[in-house]
Length: 115
Length: 116
Image 1 (cartoon, rainbow over the protein chains, first blue to last red):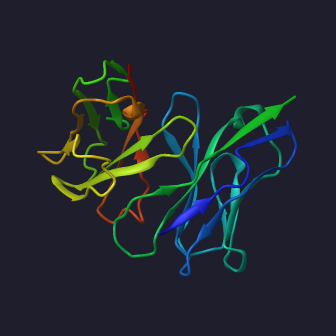
Image 2 (cartoon, rainbow over the protein chains, first blue to last red):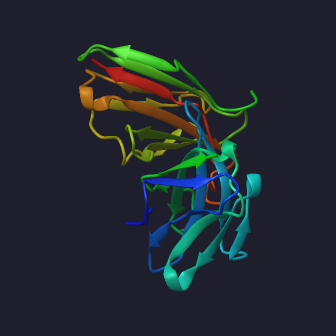
């Protein structure tokens, strides 16, 4: 079955520092990959998605992610962290089946941004 | 509506009670998904509807869980004889077409269920 692994359940960065959240997928065929953000007591919001077009994907709020097939990775980055980026981030996958399907999520990474 | 709405936002039930959780998807969205998010975990798939048809219910944890979408819009997730392990946030998501791989799933704020 498709799965994703997020390394680091908690990441803390200083405001203005680089944000790097790691995600690796397990699949012989590259799936569709997603990053979602969840603020306290709110639903999930899509940051960006990879659907086999460009390997470098730009999303909202200055986030981007690079798909690397050789490393089976889809890490999320942001050059300069802002206090408002503090939230829970989830990597998710849908198998490349060409049909409607469910999201399979990682366990999440809580991002803390300090002054 | 502007987004996916869910009600109630919070529900406390005594063990053994039945509960019903409602999801109002974005108007016109064909696909509707239910997910369960336990504390400190990522959401896990429960079930999927395309219009009124329930195409996938492989994630429902037991026969105490039942979902319906009779007119292809509003959906209800029902849990019978609630147990403490049912305590979680229940998320609903909708997407525009049946090909959800190409369309963003928009999530509601969730219903936090606490079973005492």
